[in-house]
Image (cartoon, rainbow, N blue to C red; front, side):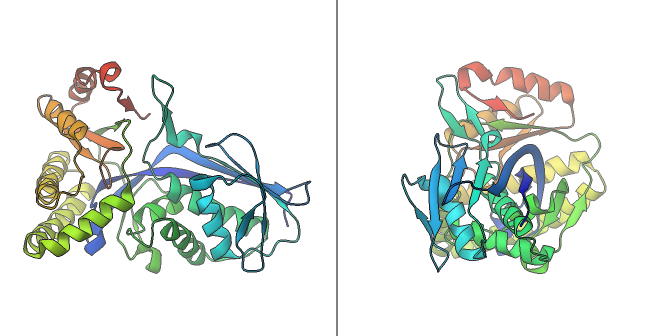
Length: 337
């Protein structure tokens, strides 16, 4: 086993294809500069030690014969769930006790009143990938990339109740900037690397509201069962739009890209209204209204319900004017670098 392993995994944003990717549509996703940092080294205690940036203190634990994590003192709660899923799925063969630290502080933002808000940029996917890679490297396991990706996705799926498409895990694992992928990318270990179109400008906004991906995906699936005709019609449109968007992205047709993102958004909002899914919060709606007066298109990123939103424009000046107009101080809205 190695003396110390350090792994850094990026976060992600979903540019297009959210929800429809569950039914086979391609999605365009991108990594961010925010990263989770995971360190594993030998523990000098007679038990394992877990440290998370989400909580103060240390969390000693042991592992039983079935790879269940047994907390010896305090339970870190939600901040320890991915570690528990990782040990259960990976079943590490440890010859010594470990000291494991997960630093996901870059995936949180502190508001003016001192509240730490999760940004919604794929921290759970990044941690799933990071723990998988770090444990594999620490044990000197020569595992294939295909196997590592599958294991990381299984860990993430365990946290999400086996919901979701896996595109966030694929994006974090690939760490190749902008990619196009599908729900089969984990299974097939395939995706396409894309360039960022020249002249397309983006600003990612944090709304300081938490959106539960699990709840929103469950709401979407419930609504699709209740309104099959409407959702089938929308899916047909989604498949056409995402294919056209893929072509427009590769040809760097910025105006067409934004038009197609708008068209996709129209159908998402219709389904959100019909099914009461909760994708568009009032803050998202208000920001989009302001964006529309500045030649800027704004949309929720990923599942929606708060978290992250993306503002697109072919004009840097328009994007700057929009940023000034939303009044970040009054709205408690932040911007990702």
